[in-house]
Image (tube, rainbow, N blue to C red; front, side, top):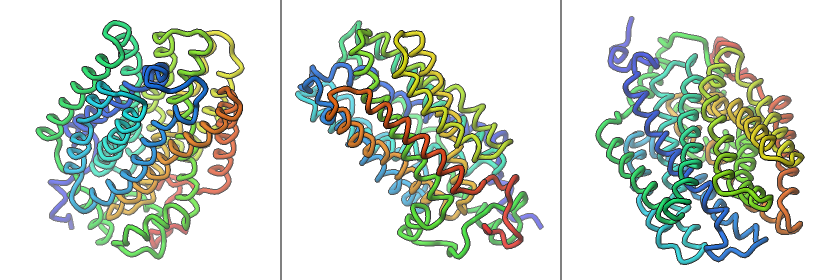
Length: 438
């Protein structure tokens, strides 16, 4: 017997393509906001009072971003499961409004740190909701494609913004360029989220009812055993963070990849600036990394729907580490560009696949909170990376030790996933008849 809720809440990208495209546009805006900082601010940090060689102080703006975004990811998941995805998305864009004004009026580097507190709220709420909403309205066998398309749009936008603000800063000055660019993006995104984005929580609740009634069609997901239908936030946090081996392995991989992204965000511009490159050249190198990452993710996300989640995650971590090592060993802009692309491919393999893997084994009733917990650990990786890499670079008075440390950590992280987690794709590794992991 077909459940009465099935017709209005059917899942699938094709069926829900209108809302899917609106969410793609939302995450593109989110990527533009974070991408606008990546070329200009680290390279010109001296204008904001950061002394040359003060790597830990320089990375304080990434630290503030990572701590806030990590915490807000978890909060966003809990709020989204309770009040809905759209309200959290709109709140994220409201939090983005102060960012361009703080950058424009910044008297010192602490103003930039403050701006990144708001950036963390914006990213934690807005980006989290674009992912969660897409997973609500798509089928399990489309999760890799859905998360790949989501992250592709976001990181392609990040690369576009890095290149664009590099050029705009040369023409109009860094502060004016970031102010005009940032305010335009935030206002457009806020208006479109209010007017055109639809609430997707009813899809998640309908899916939960299907699992509960036994009417769900498709392979059985490997949901964790011994967990109530509606566990508390603390129970979910402990399960995803520590108690479940596959969740635990995926969470640490999230931390490792954000340590790598901290390196790109905070130290790539310093590394290349010290080697005589211009802001425009630095913009292209950081942009190549982000755009490769962005463009490739739709394909790599869909690949994980075919070959499973585990292989792309492990291969991506190792590819990312190899690209970082190649950057240090290279001596010209063409090789730097090549290895920036290698890094982007590594990120493309692992990044959407990690989200899809977490969603595979998260029951729909608490999927938002499970994704929020994973994203808490993943984006706390920014804070871990800022402290670790900042201290290492400060100690050695140069950046190369931070590159080598990150490459080693990525290698170890890939080994952990390879040996310490199960394949989560329900079609390739379904649960037993009880519908739980086994």
